Image (cartoon, rainbow, N blue to C red; front, top):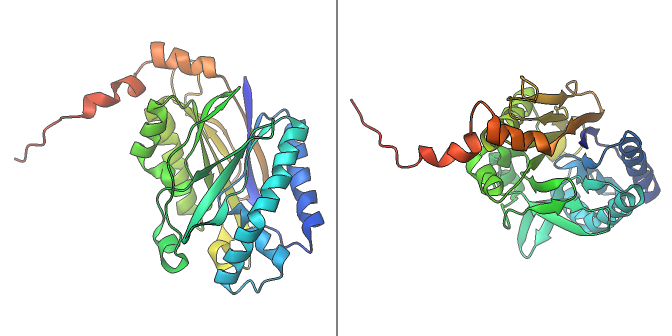
Length: 287
């Protein structure tokens, strides 16, 4: 059994790095103390790093540059915490530079100190303009003691062919860090995560940013943590393993059993993972 902790995460304004370290230490130690094996922080949770550089929050370009400059240090802090507590962590994602491109990167941290990352693939209209964030890099799988894990950042989970790529490669769990400014946006991501669990006969989990913040990119956010599954034999009939209350800050915990996925894929009422290719080659006839 694997326990996932999915964050509903408020952004803070820090006076210095010790304040940031204290916040992250508190969040990680709380989840680890509750028995969590995998901790999922949200998309653009790293935007609070701008406060550590003393920038004007009304200047989005300056705030973005400050976050990119501070990401390496923040990732190191969380990597140390992952090792200290023996947990896997998806760190809060944020903007980084890759050559001339501005990209949205989520780091995956192993308890042995290894650090990987997944870049967001498909941008929302606002990310494209005015923010000028670009999709980047390949999809990746992260091998762990808790199965093979993929990350689809927010909007990416609303595209079934991205999820199909990782499930065909063997993903058992898809993690979805998200940031949504409306309740409708939260539900789009949640519905996407639940649909991907159904189609791929895998587990999915989402984390969300919540609350106001003085930087335009995350000025208002709504969401909740959640863990989802294919609704089939031996698993919750609703497809919901656990779901937090909307905009209530804190962790949502859910326990998942990879053996249950094997039973569903082999003995469940449907075989969506295996039957996916049956869609191909169908002809459309117009009356």
